[in-house]
Length: 495
Image 1 (cartoon, rainbow, N blue to C red):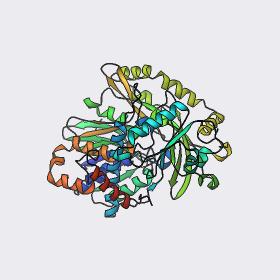
Image 2: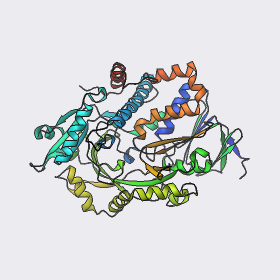
Image 3: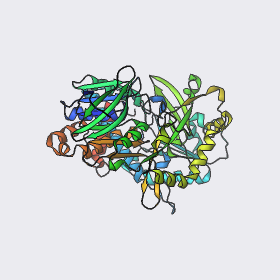
């Protein structure tokens, strides 16, 4: 393919205008003000895919309520290591957001305090939650957590969940009052608005990247705009942050580090309630336990959402299967991503996840009555006429090579970067958005290693993220100090 129509030669191209690209763009512009950046988004607006507020749960994932982050071992012990890691990563995100609000770079209308709760029923699950609480309560990150099996207490915490519930049923819940609800769409738009106001930054909407080709001195990106002629961009560094759309572009880059990766798409649906008389009876994000074989993003939860200043309730998500990699993608996305190098990992991962396949088939063929029954597990008094079905965002789980198993299906996120650091891609899903800052710092370390070692960059990062380079887990005083500061700046102080 000829590349004679080079429209611009920025230092950096960010593919996708979601929370990941916005975060990386802000960090790069703060660290090097003279850097030139092009942001390319296939959709007609910013944050229309996974970052859109209605396409995700909006949970500030701090592992306060998500039971899949605290698995029970065969000996009955509870492993909280992943919860600790995720909680610290969310604190880094909050520090950057607080700094940007303090500087007046972004608005603070994207984050609200909404209690995070875990809720279980049945003796076995109550035993698990009790052990989980005992394992977490003495850790500084989870010191606010409260546990209760008292039905009157549970009634106060979550009246809709307790209404019409069997009096003989064993119940338990934990609650952390300082949990959060995040409108990642509003946050992304605010960050990109700031970027657009900076010199040397262009945001191009309706511009689809169709190819990524290595050159001796950088990368050529072929771009197809909605209403303009096809053109090329040439850049020294490229970040593929296009959600499910990142994998096909990573494959086109043909970097050695990206070979063998595949993607398993999982769609989702919500039940949504906007009736004030019901919405006002619930103020929490209440997470339960996942069904056997269910992917982590399908853990059932009943959530308070605050979007554009209006409260709603969401329940779900109900999982499903489609071959699209983006909500507005093509049914050919999955088949077109199959390569000789990833056939074995994809087949092996599929054979190891028969339960997941059965679960997704069951979800796809659900009737409205089936969805109502799942809701009634959380809210026994629920009536279908009060809820509307909404389509959630598309998630693409990572499939990667494994020496022992041939291939594995990996939940979470995966950073893939070339050896020379000139291109990086982010694959995977939850809890990505909440941990965006920690992920982008890893990309900076891998792709800008020399600059990251300089005193100038180190000092600038510490101004933006005060705990950078230090362990909050190992320094409880620093944790409490930075947390008090972010709570004040982000309006999260518990009265």
